[in-house]
Image 1: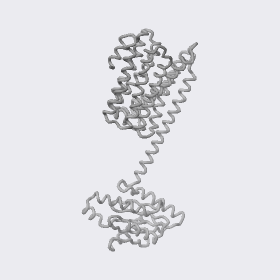
Image 2: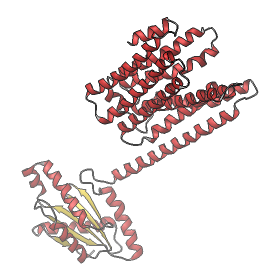
Image 3: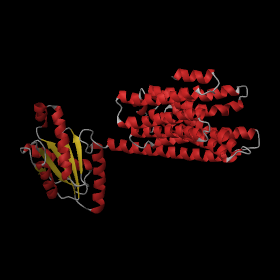
Image 4: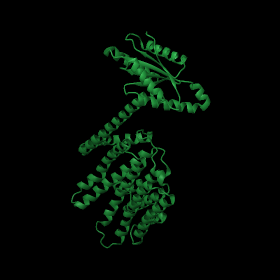
Length: 460
């Protein structure tokens, strides 16, 4: 059907009642093919919905061929049907990207808008402005070129968004679909390009304008063979590949290059349009830079948080412990409030590992640290000091109160495990290392005294 439609459009003049029948039949066949392929592929509802909209985007403008060719007075109906096609397709593409990405991919949206703003200047200069400035043109004659240009820009932006979210390693379905929409857009530009190439015969312009949409319809029916592949983005949300970066660069340069060309052949006839396009593009570029800065700041915060957390238990690691202990000592020095440090060591942990295996030992460490954390205040710090040894920072707590807190921790230790602990209160003059050393000595006495107990440190 596709080959017949293409041949009839190219080899014969685009007239006669049989040509609209072939064109409309091809559009309806492609639309039905898409729906059948979705059912055969067992596509889910999220995949079926945007593809069904694309099937309607094929069938609706395809009907315009039949109306224009067979109706005695078609009026504006064929033009409206042709206008509805790319509009429906743009909605389907946006829904496809949205349902597949499952989130608002604002980086991709901004990139697509940057490219569209650059290409929009070309649309204005070559299609919209000439139609608006044509002398003696009626309102409908001005409306439809403007409407087709706007709708084509929407379809272009949606296609760029699809490519941006799928990335440089887009699957076959995405590449076929992109080629289909490229042919749709190219068909609308054939008459415009032909004005700059007078050597092309008008009959061939009409043939190409009729054949290109049929080729796009055929490709879209083929792309539906890979519904999930075309709908599934694989690109990094914020990352930009080299081809995508090149496309952004070209879009950004369209306005200044246009201004340069017009300035070399004064006067500059489209200064306002160039200025508006430049303002929109560079505003979007600033938004994109802000997105990248925010992403960089988030990544920096995440790296710092990860560098201060123990990867197994999720509590603070030794580096974070050192920072918080020094900060707590400085605060206690200024306020004069008490500060107590404890060191906990799970009893017979090596034997537990030997009996139950290292995975069970890791699980015990995670569950124990989680249970202990629930018993502590937000101002307290539980850190993994090394192996099965943990430290506890208790600002504003006396040694007696700290002993009661650690007794609560012993009671919630999972899997009937126990720990020994040593406590040391800061004297007001000793260093962090001296304070921890006294707590460690108290821990050693707790182990020597039979384990499963809390011992206080000797005076400094």
